[in-house]
Image 1 (cartoon, helix red, strand yellow):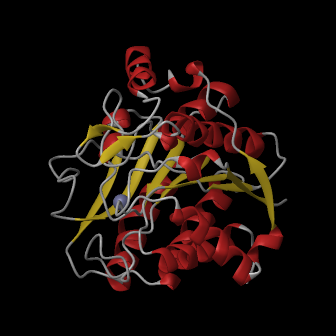
Image 2 (cartoon, protein in one colour):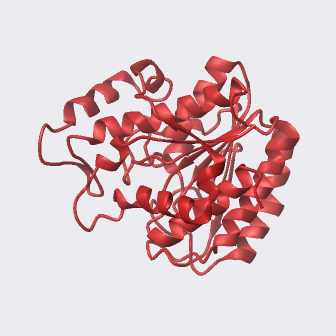
Image 3 (cartoon, protein in one colour):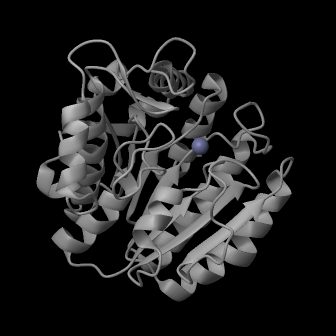
Amino acid sequence: MSTAFITHADCLKHDMGAGHPEQPARLTAIEDQLIASGVDGYLQRYEAPLATDEQLALVHPMEYVHAIREAAPESGRVQLDPDTAMNPHTLNAALRGVGAAVLAVDLVFEKKIQNAFCSVRPPGHHACTARPMGFCIFNNVAVAARHAMRAHGIGRVAIIDFDVHHGNGTEEIFEGDPSVLMASTFQHPFYPYSGTEMPASNMVNVPLPAGAGTKQLHEAVTRHWIPALDEFRPELVVFSAGFDAHAEDDMAMLQFKDADYRWVTEQVKAVADRHAKGRIVSMLEGGYALSALGRSVVQHLRVLAGLN
Ligand SMILES: [Zn+2]
């Protein structure tokens, strides 16, 4: 069975302005590296549908969804927070991101594919139940997890977040929820300055100091993530796949290399193979150094697609 690559042209039209690091060129950088590496030829491409209100309501209150719909401008740009803006295309881009997550889950459970990567933006892991934040509007991975439980009858989902920023939105949504185990690494202290104050027992948070790299990632995964994941026995693994901990990414100060994304994906894929029939849905989060982003996604996808 193959690996799906899910995206949509609407995700290229969401534009927060010249100089904003969360830019459309991120997705074209991924496409360029897929072609240059030859990995593109091994992927099954799907267009992301628009999410429905019912799907958004798995995570977000309808008042919040309506407020976002109403905030969408007909022209120009509106700021949702100091880092997050909407242009006339942002609403559809965000709905495609959630729609991609739902489609990916359905394709995996219908056994049409083995796993999926969703190359979408805006990202989602800072989005709280009723608050946009840090480039994020709707929480894509949270909808994926809830949809898998609701539509496909599973009881345990693991969320793996290796973005350099703590996934505070995902934590807020699932803290204390025994059906979800969230395992993450993130730079600390760093934006959004969360994840370290007595996290709930279903949060396996491993904060890393500035300058940490391959060695600290290996320790975090082997000592903390894997034992917790093996005990939890997820029936689906969802990645919050952010690539901004890369050494070339000057958004932050971790020092991950291309090969680290391959390694961490291999470790987590082995967990999915042991417990979840190999079911993996991966959602793009951060990653702002364009070449490093594209190359790192290729490493991640090589493992998902079973390529050498
Ligand atoms: Zn990030």
